[in-house]
Amino acid sequence: MKRAFVRARRPEHKQQRREEILAAARDLAVASGVRNVSLGAVAEAVGLAKSNIMRYFGTREEIYLILAADEWHQWAAAVTTRLEATSAGVAPDEAASGGVASAGVASAGVASDGGAPDDAASDEAASAGGASDEAASDDAAATVTVRLDASSDHVVAALAETLADRPLLCDILSQTATTLEHNVSIEAARTFKRTILAVIADLGSQVARATGLTVGEGTELVSVATAFAGILYPIAHPSPTLAELYAQDPVIAATCPDFLPTLTRALKALAAGLPTLRED
Image 1 (tube, helix red, strand yellow):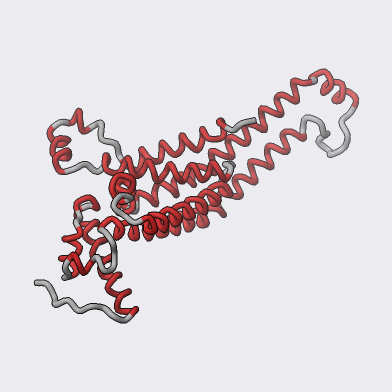
Image 2 (tube, rainbow, N blue to C red):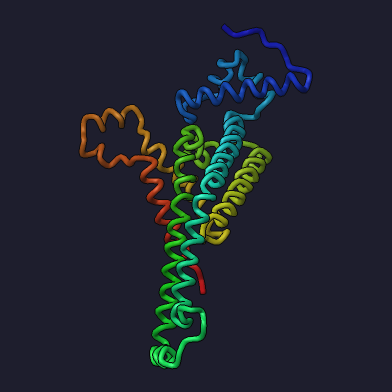
């Protein structure tokens, strides 16, 4: 039964009404998926008419863009917490790798007692010529690769696992470009875009600091993580019809990807490949 509508007149009452509408829209999306929630369902959940809902939000899509921005912020906070929690454990490994590499390069031209190499060692080093320089260069490149692999793995895990922990965000990501960015005001779209661009830029910088990636590469990794999560989530979480089909046909069911392992593998491949595309 709908409650009698009482117009909120004071600013605090209007804010409370907005929060009630957003909470109802969130609950409905969690229960049945964003694409299945209508403005009428939101209105019914809070006991108001649709026309009264539109006093606070222009459209259903604007409601979900606001919820999307909040989900992005929560995800960013979770990723930041993960990166901060693991940084202390990763840093010693990176430092150790760097130390071993430096010692290896130094041993080619410095005596074990720290003094200058003897004449025989000098002659041998001279005869080696460019070969030793090439080997040192290869060793340094290998060290950088190992270091990047070690650091990027925990960053990829932080991005992928925090996304997997947020089904509502993944659902929203799957609907953003196709529906939620339509039927909204320019101002609502601008606010949303500025929010997510700021989140991506901040996380991109954090990823760069935690790995051997550049800021641009870190930003690209974060962007692709969310884009791929939005594509993969509805595939990995099929509709009731497809779920029944998969139950009946194991061959077809085998093509349905697992969300977290697939996302993690794709991001690892991207993190490893981005440095190879750098221009000299």
